[in-house]
Amino acid sequence: MSHLVVDVGTSGVRAAIVRPDATVEHIHHREVLPSSPAPGFVEFDARLMADAVLAVAHETLAEGGPVESVGITDQRASTIVWDRATGEPVGPGVGWQDLRTVGMCLALREQGVRVAPNASATKLAFLLDMADPGRERDLCFGTVDTWVAWTLSGGALHVTDLSNAGVTGLMTTDGSGWDPKVLEVLRVPERVLPAIVDSSGAVGEAAALPGAPPIAGIAGDQQASLVGQGCTRPGLAKVTFGTGGMLDLCAGAARPAFEQRGPAGTFPIVAWRRGGAITWGIEAVMLSAGTAVEWLRDDLGVIASAAESDDVAAACTDTGDVWFVPALLGLGTPAWDFGARGTFVGLTRGTGRPEIVRAVLEGVAHRGADLVESAEADGNVKISSLRVDGGMSANRTFVQALADATARPVEVSPVLEATTLGAAFLAGLATGTWRDEDDIAATWRPKVVVEPARRVDRDRWLAARDRATHWVQELSTLEF
Image (cartoon, rainbow, N blue to C red; front, side, top):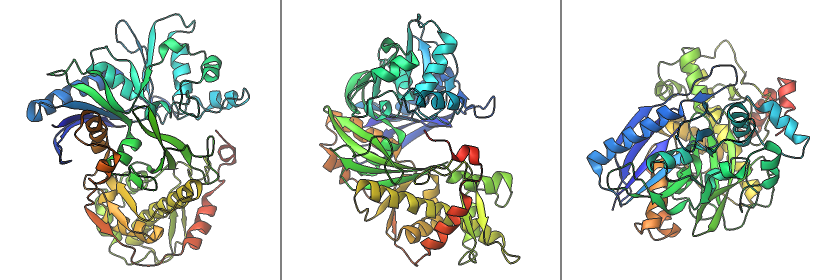
């Protein structure tokens, strides 16, 4: 039987049918864009998001249903608070990129609580302080997966899976439950929190949909992409190159040894939980990937479209020793320097448009290699090949540069966004469409495998990256 997936990203909501042969059909999409009412603020309309979820789910089912189950995947850590009785949000949805609580995060460090501003914890505290300062109302907190499950179930389900709960900043580090110390410090009543459920397993009916199929798979977008690319065995890794870039490595049943951040700048994550058993992972983060290409298009006018970057860069065989460090929002793994800034090094009078565009693509590729090296160091593994999805995986020049920078084969996902496949696999594991994780791994069929074609000077890259660091000193000193 087939599975319906509802996939909520940063800019919109998508629904699709995934067949037992892992083909994706009947895709419907609604744009739900965030807004920035003030510098550092990122908000969205949760009611508009819920309406879009129902609309695309009904449209997709009308074309491709019925289905055996529903999978949900979502942008992680974005935060919604609503009234339990009415189901109405009590304030804006606060996006994962929102930085309004940076000061709160720094103050919490003095109380022995370390949470990052992109996590849900301080966003939840902010929303509760606005809507319920006395903590008297009967409110519900949820990340986007929780809100989608609530919407599809007609208000019957208040749940989140462990992969989403694990990046809220509200969990114990061993994944056993909500952290009472953090809840106490932030004045978060436990009744506000959703029940934590398996990533794969039926949790209740999607009563708002025809036939009321069970919701049987829930995962954060990066974990869903990991599963969707068949990385269900320890040592397998993928990178999703979207606005930013996320490398996720399947680590297996043992939790990574480091508590919050590894020596090489990666983080332990819950990849998924099934039958109560946790599969752990390691995540490395690039803050700017597709953003750098968008900058060339929207702000500099160097290219007319993101797709054009491929052909323009291919007009030259190398950059002429020009290097670009994509630190437009700072640097993530391994350096974690929020005061780093985007940097061109080696420009000459002979540097032209093709060299500039190629340098940007190669700079993102070298950041990808940084993530691979960091994951290998913190995970104590060798990543023999790299699987990729996301918008930039369609760019041939970029994928070749990534293979060259990492010095290993790059396997391109057969679907541009593997999150949808991953949510379907988790739902299908619960209903018997796929037997186990090995069955999922066996579905992997890359669209193309790109082999390294030349040796690159990683030392030259590292020297350029060093030039980009510590540009805004007060931001470079921030640690979360």
